Each structure stands twice: as C-alpha cells, then as structure tokens.
Length: 579
Image 1 (cartoon, rainbow, N blue to C red):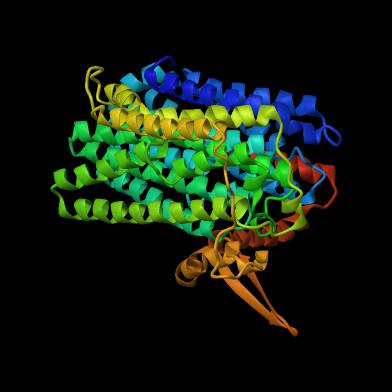
Image 2 (cartoon, rainbow, N blue to C red):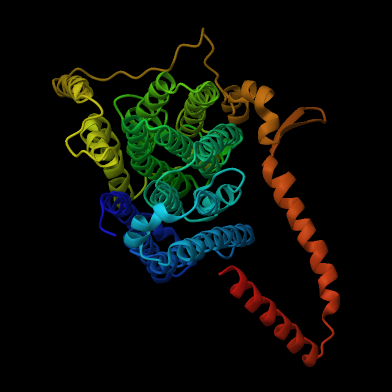
C-alpha cells in the first residue's frame, strides 16, 4: 500500500530506527566478548525491514509473511542474551503470545477473504460494504484480539514486562517504539478502512478495553523497581490510551459525527508518533544506565546525574515528554486526546454513551496523573539523590554514539512539540478527507518558540557571565544544620510510591514483607494479578491435559499413522465446511 497511513508508519519506523542504529554502535560493544554482534545486527536489520514490509503490504498474504518475519526476528532478539536462563523463559512466553496473535490475525484475513473473495487490500476496501453485520463483527473481534495481543492490551499484555527487560535495551526501544505501533497500524487499517461502518457497541468495547489497560498498566508501572519493567508497563499504558481514543473515534463515526471522529483518530495517530519517539528515548536511557552502572534496579542507583550529565539530560527530556510537560510532544498529544473526549461529551446525545465517554475520560485523566508519578520515580530514583550502591558510585559516562542517538530523539521530542500544529493538521487532513482542513491553530508554536528562545538566552547569558570571571559556586543543600546525610535516609523507590500502593496495591499484586531480627527489614513483592490468576491457571490446565494425553503414546508406528490419518480427515471436513 502507498496511502497516507502506510507512509505515516514508514516515517515512524525511519525516525525511530535510525537513531537506534546510531545508539547501537556504542551500546553493543559490551556484548562483543560473549555474543556474536554480526548475528545481532543481522536480526536487527531483518526486524526493521519486516516491520516496514508489514506497513507497505498490499494484500493479506504478504502482510502475514512480513508479520511472521517480524515476530520470529524479534523473538531471537529477545533471547539474544541466551546464557541467562530467565531470558529464555521470557522469550518462550513472548514466542507463544506472538504466535497466538499471529494465529488470530491470520484467521481474520482468512475470514475476510472468505466473505469478500480476495486478499487484496484495495479490493477489500471496495467490497467491505457487501459483508453482513455479523461477518463484520467477527472480523473486528479477531482484529482487536490479534492486534491487541501484539500491542499489549490487557489481558493479553503479560509478555510485555517479561520480553522488554530480557531484550538488549536497543531492541527494547524498537519493540516498544515501533513494533507495538505496527499492531496499531493493522487495527486502524481493518477497523477504519476495511470495515467501513462499525457498530457503536464495538467502539464502546474498544474504548473500555483501552481505558482498563491504561489504568491497570500505570498502577503496575508504579510498583516496579526495575527501570525496564516500569517502562514496559508504561508502554502498555500508552497503548491503552491510544486504543481508548481509537474506540472513541469508532463511536463518533458510527453516530455520524465525522469531524469529531476524524479529530479523535488524528489524536491517536499523533500519540502513536509521539510515543514512538519518547519511549525509544527512555529505553535507550535505561540502556545507558545499564551500560554505565551494570544495574537496572533503582534500589542500587541514584546520583547518576553527577557523572552522566548528557545522558541524564536526554533522559529528563524523555521523562518530561511522557509526563506531558509543555512544550514537548507528549503534552501536545495528550491535550489533543483529552480535547477529543471533551468535545465528544458535548456532542453525543445518547445518555449511556455520553456517560461511558465521561467515565473513560476521567480514568484516562487519572492515568495521566499516575504517569507523572511513575516518571518522577524513575528519573528521581535513578539520576538524583545520593548513590545507593557501589555500582552507582563507580558509574562512568557512555560512548559518543549512544549520546548521539539519544540526542536525536530528544531533539525530535522538542521539535514535534513546538511544531505539533503542523503535524496534527497534516494528519487531520487525511483522517477528515479534506487536505485543507485544520484541527488546531498555530499559537502553540509561537508560544513554545518564544519560551525556548527565552530559556536559550538565559543559558547563554549564564555561560557568558562565567567566561567573564564570575565563578560558579556550588554548595550543599542546607538541611537545618544536619550535614551527615546518608543514602538510606532518602526516599527509596518503594517508599516513594507507598501511599499509592496502600490504595491500589492489590491491582498490582503488591505485598510488603517485614522481617525483624535485631533490625527491621522490609521487602516488597510484586506479581501481575492477571498473569497469576489467568495465565498460570491456564498453564496448569494444559499441564494436566498433557499428562493425560501422553498416555495414548504407545510407541507403535501403526497407531501414530492412524492418528495422523484421523487428524487429516477431520481437518478436511473442517476446511470444506467452514472455509
């Protein structure tokens, strides 16, 4: 395909993958002694090209070929550090979940071809009006489950906080910044282009699933002490927000409010772009911490800013962007999302739909507050305060290539915020069908430009004064006469979010253990509630069935041939009956 949607996602791939490649030249040096860098570079190339192949595919068959290449290459990247047993376990879970996703998406394309007689996307778009409502609903449900699983929607999210920490940080940046968005691309193409008219009930369901994902993921991100696991849940939260506003766009479209639907879809796509930038930057920042301090556990970090000023500044830009601090791109994207909900609330006249939109809007606003909290925790506990371990004390600066990659993305975060009206109106021109249409004014650009110029002027003035002999004088923070400050006296990562965990801890499986043996020792334990109560029970059920089924293995070739023959007959009957 060569339409605006495909071009938009190709641009996303390019502007996030290129800085990642630059960053990787420095970051991957730490793997040279133990692993093959040629293998890693080859898999990275295949991963990037397969994602590009997905978004330019013109039919369902080529889409699935590139989709599987993307899934398999990302699996091998996740288990790249195969000498660590935990990484293999995480990779296997990801492999299973990504192929469940692939199975659902493939089934969707098969049904679509059965209903329309073709796999060609252009013909599908033209013939979508001829399918029945029940057929359309079946396709949409499979699309939501298949693409939602790949994107990290609850309850199909459990692979995300396992695969991201296991993968090298540059790979995590591409998986979160690009791969999750490829799933959103697939959903947008099916729900907004192929399906045409979508039931309002399906739109409500998508909005609710997205909202539940957002609030559940942000609570879990608050509870994490592993930086990459926190960022993984944060990715799920942002995916939930995007699907919530996509659901809103489907609702408005089904109610005939086309201009508001176009605005909501533009908000979702703009946030896709923004999240790709700042989340890639944040995973690279986490990789810089791991590279310099050999730890991603915030309990072992603190005070890194003193020796990693450039990397810390880039991390601060990414943190401010995800926390929606103006004038960065995250602020522009979230304001557009919240504005879409507010305008929809005033335009929708059906009471129960309006109340659902109001409920989801409030939950998403609360989620935004949780994101700020989690962002302050991740940056403050990592870069500020006093070092909490020898690893943090002996930290060193990262290579120039890593700095360059992060600097490019930090620059994008600023530019895409300052010039956000131009990008938003470009997207809105496609979603509304009128290239000349405008969704927002350009006042933001003017105010942001003035603000940046003022800050730059103050910075340059300070530098000039320093050169004229006005020496900088750095003193310790006054602490009421108490100067013997120890690291254990400052907030710990657990203590910083303790008020929230007292209220919402059950949703994150948070449990605090206290042990007294002359001194008081506390330890927080966290488990994903859905993983513990759904996934593990399914695994136990499968183990139980496998233990029973294995009894039919008699070791006789004739019996095995008969099994194959019976399976073949059953498969033929199913194909002839349903395909």
